[in-house]
Image 1 (cartoon, helix red, strand yellow):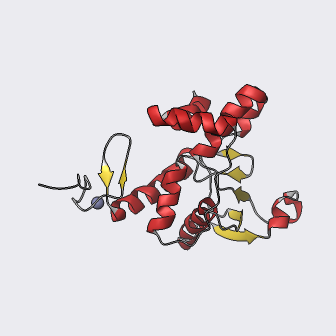
Image 2 (image 1 turned 120 degrees about the vertical axis):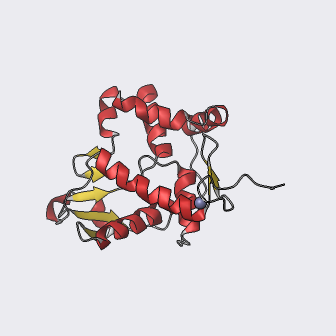
Length: 193
Ligand SMILES: [Zn+2]
């Protein structure tokens, strides 16, 4: 008898189980992740040929994955990427030659922000919480934090672990997620309905 339920595609040992109970092995997970990034870019029109995409280099798991993904995209020559000095990122983009600014935001962070805006902020701001806002793009928008972190681990990317910043809203949503595993995706999907 098998100890694990195996990868649904190739019957190897699984590294992840989706909420629909499908399990995938390392190779299939990496392939799924990279295809989903491309899907996100197409679905939300995040990039066009010739874009110069700036990003800020940091050492948390989201930032190292964003950098790896941007470099993967630059390899096919349709876009260029530019590492920005972090002091430049906060200035107005006036002097920079970038056409897009990529930020490492995930479904987790976006769902916290949506709920915070609804509870304490301004509904008008919800429009800014989309994967494309003027020049800002969020290629990791459709991924949960745990999915981004797993990708970083499986690809052997070097990152530093920081303690998660908790506040009332994020604690509440994380708690809800235990009984409603799709809650974060549902919250951000609400923006598009
Ligand atoms: Zn597999």
